[in-house]
Length: 159
Image: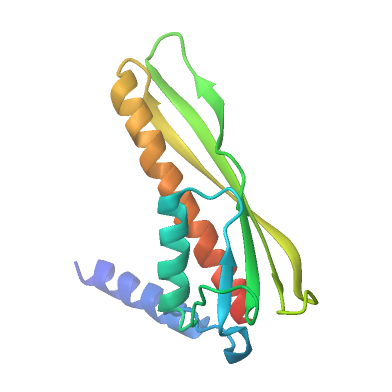
């Protein structure tokens, strides 16, 4: 028991020594505000998620594009690829991939931040015998990927 405690303590100290820390919300530079969101082909829930994340990052959002910096966002459609499966089991491994392209222009159309693309993936282990749960799990994880992409974009914009 004492050895386990010592090993756990050593692990925690090594994490602290390497500089690991939990990151809070990304605060975006003040020059981005006010910001007009050009959502491209985003659906209403994706737009709401992006706006909420931007507000949380202390960005003043504008409803008018004329006098604001413009953030263009474009999410690629979700791609799914079967990575592994077995004829002996109904379990299959699926990889989900999605990309977010973004860029910022000022009110005069000058590029402030070049177009950049972020791609994220995740693997899911699914039971292919239950199609309803299968589809619901893919939808839920698609939303998680969207949120991770937006958070990655905010992190990159803050640096």
